[in-house]
Structures are given as structure tokens and as C-alpha cells.
Length: 390
Ligand SMILES: *[C@@H]1O[C@H](CO)[C@@H](O)[C@H](O)[C@H]1NC(C)=O
Ligand SMILES: *[C@@H]1O[C@H](CO)[C@@H](O)[C@H](O)[C@H]1NC(C)=O
Ligand SMILES: *[C@@H]1O[C@H](CO)[C@@H](O)[C@H](O)[C@H]1NC(C)=O
Image (cartoon, rainbow, N blue to C red):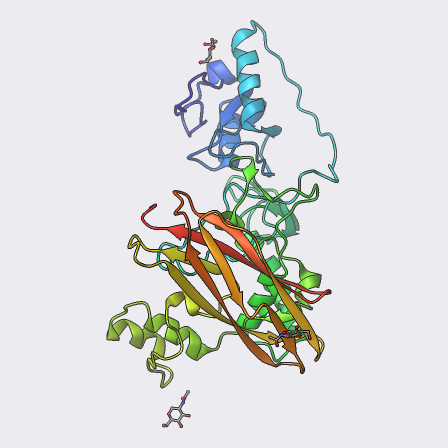
């Protein structure tokens, strides 16, 4: 019946075999999220004779709700509502509850938000490469479902349905893959890196009430460590204006900066003749990535870091771009040149971006760099990290 304890115990989690049928029979049972699958909690309640379940979030999930095909009537509530319901159940002599379906909710605000379960940066393997890249729909996704399993995936679930609602990176990935296929169909000559660049530089970072995308695990504004370049935008990605292209040799040169052993490099080069030329990338951060992550070392003698990028014009032949960079507290930023004048399609032009140490920060700082031609906004997120914060 939902404990009042802030640290969940096995029965508040409705773990298998922890509910006493004498206590829960005929009752609606409050179960905390965590440890065992959400649908299994419902099965445990049902097996103990419960007639319904209120699935309450804990701090780990905050107010984010995910739809499930439960085996008994159930509702999911956020952490705050969960606390209020537990307080009511514990302080009332005869608490009662009604579970009702209120219909489909449209126009939810704010939307979209970064899912609590979404993977987060930074990329500890190579801080110079910002991760994640993008965010895409992945919560409560309605999609086709195999007849092999019931909608809860529990072996005891004998229902068979053609559609199901699931959440997770596995539901986000097909959205991105489908849009990548759409881009490739429109631009068959584009490399995988060009497709990814189009997705990243056209992604958006504001929600439907014009605020920065919210992180649903904290209810605070998300950062590029949560959303990368932002939420993908399929129509804009078809016409990005400029792309940051990367060849297989470029990726290999990047690996050459990663202090790999000859044996490890061989794993990447065995099907080709690639070898390290050590002449294209001054630092790992020079990989022609559509995101910019600058890492200031502890050594204060290093006061300027410079990165290089090359953009390819995939818009009109004569295109004139100018750059806009957001302000930072810790550094001054200089982009050279500040304008890029293209005269033909597929023309490549390079620029460099210098970061001069001004005032080291204890926390990473975030912003963006945008090339604008009046039609396109080619945006790269910027993350500036001061070692050693980790
Ligand atoms: C539950 O916990 C809260 C906060 O710790 C406390 O104020 C309240 O009295 C407790 N309720 C019961 C019924 O134990
Ligand atoms: C690998 O080397 C062979 C022989 O030298 C050459 O024909 C081939 O084009 C090379 N392949 C690549 C990917 O460079
Ligand atoms: C691009 O064109 C503008 C306007 O003609 C000019 O002011 C600018 O210097 C040019 N930029 C470069 C890098 O040549």
C-alpha cells in the first residue's frame, strides 16, 4: 500500500512475492517505480488479488509519465502527485480512489521535452566530440507490434495486438533512421556524415512555448549535454544550406589522434589501406564535426585554442553567409572569416574559430555558432569545458 519511506522498500516497489494478499486483496495498490518492470508490478498486484494500481514516480523519473499496457486497471502519476496520493492514503481512515480514462490529450505544453531516460553527455572518451548528437521522439510511441508477445511482453500476457506504445532510445532511433533515409532519397550523393550534419545543424533547441527545451528529469533548461544539437526537424534537414562533411579517411585521421595502439588501429584499417598521415587534424577537435566542444586544459599557459571547420555549399550557387556566435563568460570567441561567399554548388570554404581564455568557469558553458544567409540557419552547438571539472 505504498510506504511513507523516502527510500523504497521491496513491497513499496511491488516486487514479486512482497505483497500480502490479506492486505491488498480487493484494493487499489500504490507501487513505486524502480527495479522490476512497470508492467510486472501490475502483475504482482493482480496475483495478490489487487484490483488496480497507482504507479508512482520517484525522484529518478520526476514528472515524466510513460504509457504501459498493464494487466489490470492502472494509472501512472508523477513524483509530486505520488507524494500527495500517499499522504492522502496514509492519513485517511478509509481512503478511496477511482481510475478514469480522460481521453487523448493534444497540444501538451511544453513540448517536446528531453526524456528523463535519455542518454547524457559529456563524451568521456573524447571530450572534444560533443555527445549526444541530437534528440528525437522516443516517449509513448505508437508503432506496429509483433504477434509473438502480448503488449506487456510478459509471458503471462495472452493478449495479441497489432499496435503497441513503447518508450526508449529504440523508439527514437527509427525516427532518425527514417528521416536519414528521407534525406538520402532527396540527396543520393550525400555521405553519412553529410546526412548527420543536415540533421544536426537544422535541429531546434526551443519548445512550443519558445523556452529552451526542458530536461524532464530536472524540469530545468536542458543543455547540449542533454540534447546535443537539439531536436531533429525533418523538413529543415532536407535543405540545410551548408554541410560539415567527413570522409572515411578523416575519421581514420581522428582515430590517429586517439593514442590507439597499432593493433587497435588495425581493427579499423584492416579492410582498407589506410594509414595515419598526421597532417589533416591538429587536434581531435579538428574533426569536421557539426558540433564544437572546446576543452581548456588545467595548464593555464594555454590561453588560446583554435579549431578548424570546412563547410560545403549545398544551397543556391551564389550564397552569402555571415556568422553569429553566442557570448560566453569564460572566453572571447573570434571567427575568421566572418563571412563566407560561395559562387557555386558543392564549393567548400573553411573558417577557424579561436577561443581565448578570459575567466575559467567551474561549470561547462554552452552556446552556439550559426551561419546565416537570410534563408538558412546552420547552427552548431558549442560546449566549453574547463579541466579538471570531472
Ligand atoms: C510521512 O512522511 C512525512 C514526511 O516525512 C511526515 O510528515 C508524515 O507525518 C508521514 N506520514 C505518516 C502517516 O507516517
Ligand atoms: C589499396 O592499395 C591498392 C594497391 O596499392 C590500390 O589498388 C587500392 O586502390 C588501394 N585502396 C584504397 C582504399 O586506398
Ligand atoms: C563576402 O562579401 C561581402 C559583401 O560583398 C564582403 O564584405 C566580404 O568581405 C566577403 N567575404 C569574404 C571572406 O571575402
